[in-house]
Length: 168
Image (cartoon, rainbow, N blue to C red; front, side, top):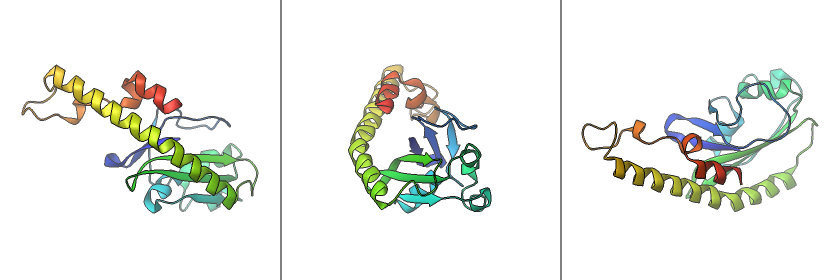
């Protein structure tokens, strides 16, 4: 699962299980351009992708080449929508071509709807905690009294509560 950071068009990898893939791991931020998650964000819809060769990926999804090299041939990505904004993407892959169908898209869509509320609540909680910390600290890194981006640490990295919520 990835959490979407729309302001810088990236996705932060927050939860993973399964086949080891060379490349970005848990906690890393990756660009959405050229990724299946990025396409799910743009279209706000679930995506089912079957791949026969690496040439199938290169034009539109070069970020999946490492997954292909690890043996994955079927992919499914489901956006997590909150108030019509994609806040995360669930992505699964299989080494078997044809592993997923519309039934799987529907199932993961329902799973996404269930966990989206928890993800959105965790984000709100982390934002409130950062705001409270910022207020108590007197606007660090800010000369004008307006908070700077640096004064708000990334919750997936710095907030242990966020880490617990993002793994549940």
